[in-house]
Image: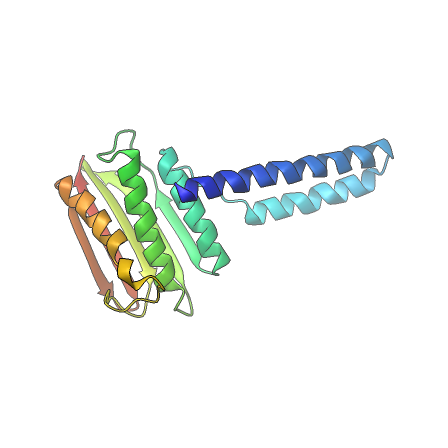
Length: 190
């Protein structure tokens, strides 16, 4: 819910700011400052092309979570890769999907922050009637006993919540270390 609120707040701020941009463009047009308008449009196209990323997975809940976590990863200079195409019908409701993706991506981003060439990669797909989520990230360790979080009392609860949802859906939840990466794989019959 917090990520959804943050995403909508960011959107509202961008719309508000863009109104000012349009007013300025109108003022330049009224003054027949066409070269300035052309230069502004050129610069703005480059800025938008370089910075505007939106993920369209086929599921609006996944889109919001993936986008908001992507913004967090970007702010931490973490390469964020998304390979996702959700089928129309998935074996999770919106809340379950939000809990799984939100918690796993938070963990992946936190772990990746400690690495030099930090990355988080998200893959979501369906194959042979099995719904599959894989989150792969750079990490020094797999140990869940060590936490960099200030709230050590609640450390690991998000991972347990995600695993519980998967188990309740008769799915498989696996987490393992592979060289300097941590991989979480989820398979749920669809």
